[in-house]
Image (tube, rainbow, N blue to C red; front, side, top):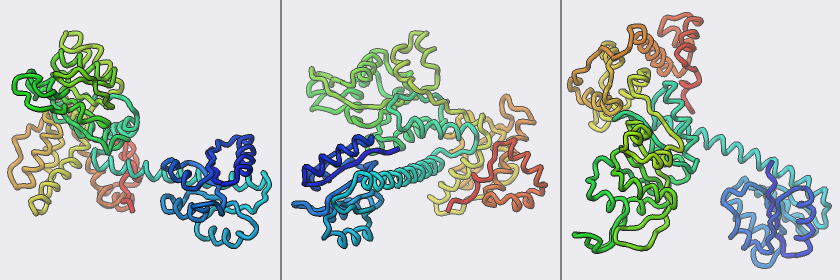
Length: 444
């Protein structure tokens, strides 16, 4: 239950009395003698109620109400009025005030109005939170495409981790979308308005690595003309994504570890430390602890990076996502070219579902773009490694069900007719493949 209350009144005796009543009843009270001071110190998205006198020197309670309503129309404001201000207060309630109390008022009257206002505030904030979560989930579904259980779990993990101030290690094969996941962790969290800096550790020559990460002062080494801000310093307040972290030279691993531990760095050629606020998201294909045991990676850094781990399944382990991803990439390529997206034949769909996709999403995107261009698809081997005929048939069946559900907006009767299946059989197949009707109902 919310319990935060702000009281604005120029009379010290009123402020003291109200604070005593409310504090004894378990409320957290903040006092202001001037409306201007209240506005200047009001927290964003204040989760409480404001009680304000109507007549005060400078900005009065009605002006304060107007300013508060402009920022948050749902913020409850209770006005304290003298006898002659009652008609004015009634008009203020029509304009958005929650309630008014005529002086002198009893503690019971004040507490009753305040509790009702706080209950309303709690409902409003909870409703906002649910809407924001639904909006975030919808945006993430449009960014990390897929209906497989693995992708749904990944999206839940991303939403959970995005708001936590912890470093994350992403493990996955080449082309599986590690940078996209890292970008989502940044974009859906509190650092979204700060820089996102991506570095591929395997692409930076070892001789330039330190200057690239930490920057340098003028004359720090031959050719260092002028001061240069390094990537870590540039990302201050935001996120650094270090792809192929296993390729980072051991000497730089030690310096990165110090930055993570102390949140400070030094440019090359400088003696002064610079404070930085960074979130590190690293990506790797091999197991960093195995790399550490082999002497190729610092074990202490591996633990610092792997506070939380996300594993991206290869495309061959989530075949039911292949048609959706292929359609997305093909449609995007066709729209860019001003063309219609070519339809997939049953044979082509079967070929997509049975290919092993060693290049993962990156390879699939390339095949989709070639399809949109009207070019022949690359030579795709149609016998997936380690997948039986039964598994291939199951993947194809799941895709047919998903396509019909999407086409008919989750209308079960229409899907039954399209697939010529009885209701019970359709229900059993949907349950077996983890398909839920509500996921396919078109959002208004």
